[in-house]
Length: 425
Ligand SMILES: Cc1cc2nc3c(=O)[nH]c(=O)nc-3n(C[C@H](O)[C@H](O)[C@H](O)COP(=O)(O)OP(=O)(O)OC[C@H]3O[C@@H](n4cnc5c(N)ncnc54)[C@H](O)[C@@H]3O)c2cc1C
Image 1 (cartoon, rainbow, N blue to C red):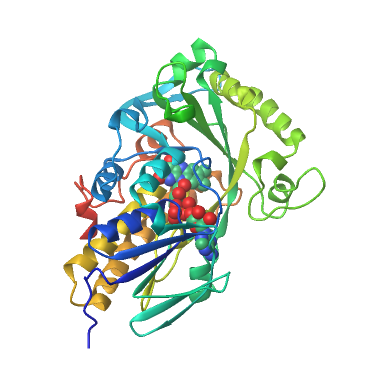
Image 2 (cartoon, helix red, strand yellow):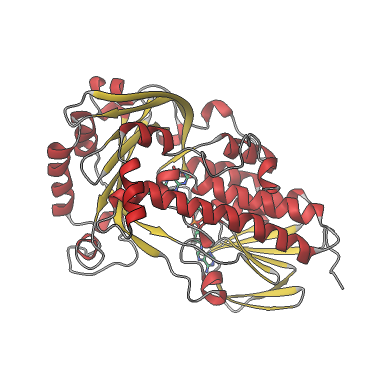
């Protein structure tokens, strides 16, 4: 018989207290569920991450959580996009207003909305047992928590996914993102005037540089106190260049990513030289003046299913689309909305609700991964098929890059303007 759910006694364990975990926790609390979040990292996460492109769907999702924030301080508005040539001339321009925020800003807004007694830092999920309408979270310290629903929001290397889908592994895309943040005051007025109110690109052969302004320290968005965020996609073969990039000065190899402070100085000197050679002077200045650029290898993750009885996956634990869509956080919010809507609307039948969530979000995640893969195809050192090569050519032009990068075009249901549109996707 279907299990009846929807009362305050229904207990949810969320493994992972980053953005997907917080969106899920807040939205399930809104429909009356009793939620606890367990996050492996002991201290607050607020210092992590860099810039995040927002979409109307992300704003709608934030509203839906009940979190309180001042829209004027969510991020830095940009008016559109532009593409610069190697010489620094504008070779493409397009109006496209967006707000650029940061991972830390979103985290602080969401975290403040969840009462402290329901957020448990320094608690790691080790294993799950699941049977019928219950799941049990086994934490590393030996605690066991029985729940009606366990949400794996534990990111790209998800423990939850590994247990249920051991064959699904992140697949390296063949290139890395060099990223960094530089203070507005450290850039020349010429560079800030060119870059400071747009999402800007430069397209060296086989690579892509992009950047945009974000809030500065303490979420300050006032002129002079903002920062500039860059992402420079560069091919790096898995067996060769990637290994070198992830090896520190003592010869120790770090997998899957290297802590920023351990990146070898000569690698940073090298990308600065390359920036002068390959990028528009404005972007070269950004790279030169960034104190500690860091590296993020780019991966695809795709799962065939997001649910296993009373265990579900959300966010990067389920699907990771390459960052060209700028949709990772929006997708995580969409997963949380779809789950809470399905549970609310099918409160008499939890299994049916989970099945509905799984169907709609697997479809969305699969579409997002496929689209992002095409957008990034020309950065891959080795293109896999003639059709990918054909796509790659389409996405190499200034116009295509401006139209397709960091937009929900082709992924969200046509005309979707509000978060509620996703839950029925
Ligand atoms: C280069 C780059 C650029 C990006 N740009 C954008 C952008 O512009 N816009 C956008 O929307 N997205 C962007 N993203 C993607 C975005 O950062 C992620 O999609 C998003 O943060 C997903 O969050 P998550 O909560 O699913 O996973 P994560 O943020 O990885 O969180 C997982 C959490 O689970 C915890 N955890 C792991 N294992 C356990 C365990 N066993 N027990 C307890 N806790 C555990 C971890 O400590 C972590 O806090 C970008 C990503 C990259 C790499």
